[in-house]
Image (tube, rainbow, N blue to C red; front, side, top):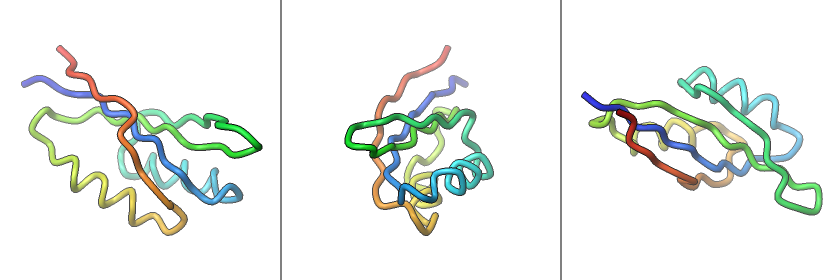
Length: 81
């Protein structure tokens, strides 16, 4: 069965970036990077590798339950193999 990579762009409270990075890794993020978007504001980009039949809704729910997350957007999605 193929897998897919999903990169989420996650807006968080700026003083909680490190806390959210750790929380994302705990729920399965392969990689989490900071990306400046301007005026000192940074978003997190989190890479998840999922089975092709995995529910993205469940993953998005877990991410949104992190207290300081204000929004989540799918930045990219690719089928692997």
